Length: 174
Image (cartoon, rainbow, N blue to C red; front, side):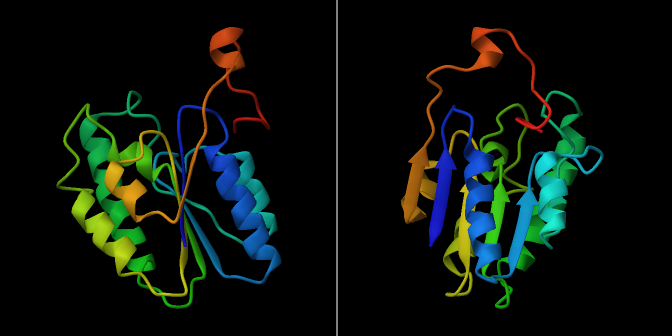
């Protein structure tokens, strides 16, 4: 199955972690990749997944406005090479591509040569039959949505970031 969690609301990564938790509980081999988050920071989900025997891999360099386009392009290229290889691994039961949608929707600088949409779609379609895939992030591309078996759009009805001007909270956002 291909499960996509998208939308402007909070909870896309959290949904992927719920699926991951169930898969771990059933003895499945899980790989968890994060396209935007940087290995230079520590995240709550990273700590928890390690305790459960899953090594999450942060492949990014942070938010698009914190680094140069070339830093992001280099990270996206390396990320895609890593993930593309994993999507051929017949021994993996579940692959989570957290924030892939965000990466594919970058418009501030060109990315199609380092993270080609058509290459991503082909890799998804040609993955081993036993492999489930979870893709998260805002602005899911229509082609990703078309390949999905499940699409959940998480809307922002109310959020303390914008409604109360409260910054990200430890344990809730990171």
